[in-house]
Length: 509
Image (spheres, rainbow, N blue to C red):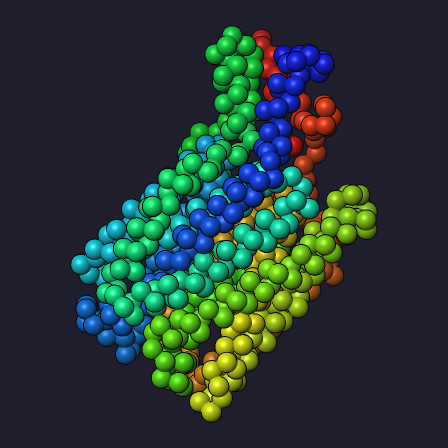
């Protein structure tokens, strides 16, 4: 079989067509798959923020007194805790089972748990169902990044798709209050869930028709299995060799991220940095209604329109991000460690001003919160916060993926856990923070924390190479493979002895 591949026969063309097909798909289909999965990311993120728009109606329906404590925010806590824990366990499994089962199982679970939320007879039901809904939503969103890596070859091709994915991750959550506010202004709060169920369920068949499997190892395993049925008993995909069981895979997917979070200074510092920014994204869903209802007498829908500034800030950051990508790609000329490959720290050029814009926006929002100033002034500060959150989020995701390479999934899982924990618990402090310290000093406290954390990308820009040289995970993470160019397709080739049989295997770079 190996000889067949290396020969110039018709068989070579047949092998070449399926080995490299993910990268050889038409650009039209690649963009169709990318935009579809990013749209799924946006859809499944909306319920995270849409929930809060129903607070006043739920409070009256279930006689929840929030004068002393924001009890209704516990449903936001449960959503984010599910969002932090589920990807840690289940997203790595898609590398063995495939992206499509991961997408559709998590999407269907997400839909299923919207139904009891819509029918909830009490607040406890909302809290429980949102834990599972948030977990399923987060699994779906996290798989999108894997799909982009699967079908776009190299840093240059992936830059724009990754940028769009980062935007939908932030905008999906930021749009939630607008969707929820618009629905509750004309309908009962339960329609916030029913409308999402109807729309999301109606789109599911279209997603099924558009998307197909992208994970290379899974496609190779299917091909090898088909060849074995045809009589080529020695055909074997690399992913089938020493394949861990499900329990072992779950153990690895949980233990490695937690170990990295505890021992890797880059993972822990970046997790703290992005987690604070993500916590502010959710905190603003509570603080904006408090501030704008108090200053301008706005109702729930009007305050949800103000929160649209977060999305507009993230979209603006997406528009200017190609400059950051260009600077990153140009850094390959200066890379002495791995000539021709961009320097990981070059991912952080825009993160420094982005983090400062984020901090400035928090101060701006706080110190412009006076009734004699027009609403647009604090709204512009909110827009700066949205710009900064996107910049920080994308920098962290890209840097961890570049620096840790084959351990990228574990590093990103650790960061995801941290940011969802902050997103869960930081909003609980919002009412006490803004009502006891005043709007101005509450935002100032958050702004000073953001200013301190802005040192994280600066430190990595200055000392990144030295830090990477001392990191066991980063040193072990670099892929070292032998490459063979066959008709323009780069392959990994290997031979493994198993008992008395020689198994030949293939893997796509």
